[in-house]
Length: 310
Length: 150
Ligand SMILES: [Zn+2]
Image (cartoon, rainbow over all chains, first blue to last red; front, side, top):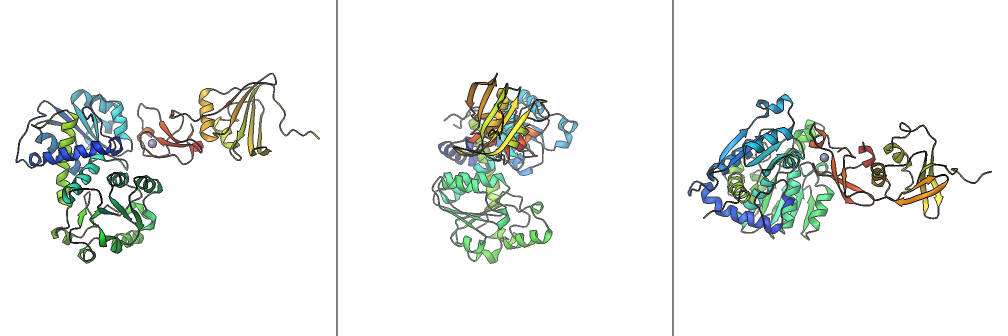
């Protein structure tokens, strides 16, 4: 298992053993992520964070992770201020960042951007989301959250609800959960079903899989409810959108059917999918999940740089 | 009445055993008729021992490797016969390449390979027959390969 200098483009670039090892290392990072312990293992490193589209949570958690390890961060949060706006290609911006830093985090609105960036960079590239493509650090922090809350991933019944058709991140998550032996139920309206290829891929791991549009029934024996955003632009008209959003709204009424120890996750920002009254229940895990982005990214950065905690 | 539907050619290429209905796609990827002034004959749904097939005969033209790869991606069962002076001097089957570089355009409009970047399109073959190819960048499979061939 060799992490030093690796690109992190897609969760599929990592084996189960490698993911397990990242997750256990992330566990060790928690007190450092909280500022209860200090380290400067990356004090001689500079990380570039290139955000060609804004994503506040992802950027702040990468930057926090780097600072907590004693490293430095350069970059931009908003493409309007960059030379990309003046027509520079991504490859050239990457060559520049490669010259100025030791690793590069890229967020870009186009699919495949991180893969392309890795071709033009000596320094390792970390994909922080490429359009509707991959978002491997989100996937890792989701796995980490389930593992820390439930002690293991295997055997948990995870219900994925929302737009399962278009978001690649939810496809990768389904893949990774199946890889770890979780039981999966996909809940979505007919028009936003999980694609056949993804279901096929999950089946190959021999896990239990269900497809339904009935959330109320699916939630009954769920251990984890993973809620994704349903985007308005996916619908032909506002009426259909409102109907679907209404059907899958997570509120106290729905949670009456849930197990006591059900945890609810969401990649955030949540708009209307989860009622704010749910925030106060012990089910709500999405804010803790967002915090988990820091120890997971700390673990990755430190592995990539070959740094070790003493 | 002559029995042959397509007469033999003196010099050129005969693409045989094209799956029925795919001949026009083969013509499209060879950019015919734009790239030739010689005679091109097409037979569709010809009965043969192995069932129906299409045949394309292009006079005075031999295909380059890139063109053969394109045919392999559309009609993997095709055979290519090179004819010189009425003789078949070479007969070969086609094989879709494992990696397809600079031949197919990604059908995903928001794929980075369609942006102004200094890279060629790149696909990986994920299934031989019928060929299925996946974009190396955006990881999407192309629904209609013929449509995407440059
Ligand atoms: Zn693509």
